[in-house]
Image: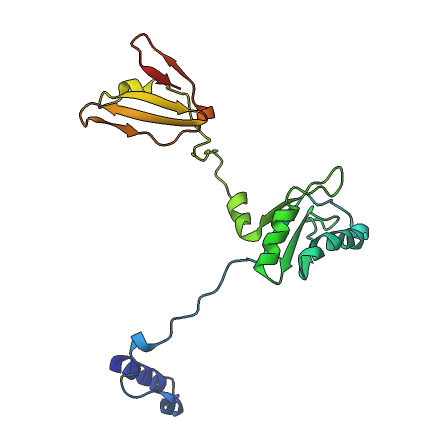
Length: 213
């Protein structure tokens, strides 16, 4: 801290600003641990939604369309609306950005208006503004999300190549389905992760083993 103070003093002397030396703190100053954490800029837009699927209109119809949209959006709370024009400035872009006073108002509007038909030709697609960049900057190659509802039949006999040489068997009771590995080395079956029953078909091969695919 003393080195910093001396550096500031020398800099002020070099700049002929010696009258400012009275404002330079003396001593070691406050410990860094005692200082308040620096403020961070909140870059989120929790109160803002982006609405696509809005009619494209010329300038003379702007106010009329904004009046119609106001009746729709104002039901969810006080808000500010911005409906941008295209690059030529001849008509609107077909979207509107709506900012509410509170995040819960924006969430309610997004859930209620997404998929709403304004007329026969225009259906709203509404997303939270925080999700807009993620949606518009997706990778060119589609990568489906893997979950219980997404599976592959690329190699439905892969269980036959199990490195531990285990067999599989299936237990079914009414609508409940459970799949187990039969491992002779541990002396008890091991339950396989749950698979919804409508994703499972089965038959018995000549050896009497249940094949699942």
